[in-house]
Image (cartoon, rainbow, N blue to C red):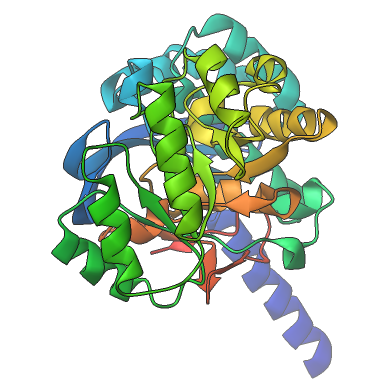
Length: 367
Ligand code: MG
């Protein structure tokens, strides 16, 4: 063996050894890990629904053929979910995940959706892990799997939770890098909240009432007041069940009304067309990337605006949503920016613009 061939042989032997070390299980054998991760919030987070200093989300890791796909679901109390119930749901289909061919992900997730009632966050954690795995297996970023251009990713808003005027001003200043803000309202303090934000910035605002206004005339009055204060659209002004009232409100205001709590899955969307201008799609509500993609397609086919939102969660869930963001009009993908102990890095934000990772799958790295 001459020197050149010796070097080549040594290099390929090293590569083979490295590849062997990277394979924790024999080809074909799969493993699934589920665990609850406590995410600490930088600020106490208050909306009309709750107030908290941390959130527990379900994290999953699906490994097969030496590839690990990561998933996450943030349970939503409104849908009677918590991290423990999400984990139980994911564990209840462990046999399906381990036996399935992950390249048949549409069939696999359809089977899991049939078998598991509710528990959308638990299902999202499995779907996201599968889609991360599939992207890595194919060697392409998830946005490429859906045929999207990462340069089309929209700006994301940064959300300001409900707080005292003083802290609202401070949070608004901290969000200096974001060209558009989303402000939570829906309590008795709506006007002071908006005035506090406006005392610091004249940026466009988007406002989320989280079903907070129960009276349709109050909703019209508030929305018209918000329009005068540079608000671009209002999210879920009235309770999800008050569709007729929301339709009435929509006919009396000028800015778009987006459905969030009223719109969980694709099958919800057709009945919302007369009451809302658009829908806020979240992976934690829909049960993952696949259903979120269907929701965006259906909303677009009905001529509705589309938005991707998120819960307070780590970069796993937010990055998965961000891979679909080139499809939508608006993004509110800041859940990972609100926490202090993100276990991963994925999508990043530059001056409000979502920057998608270019690596295969979700493109996550350890945080
Ligand atoms: Mg909302």
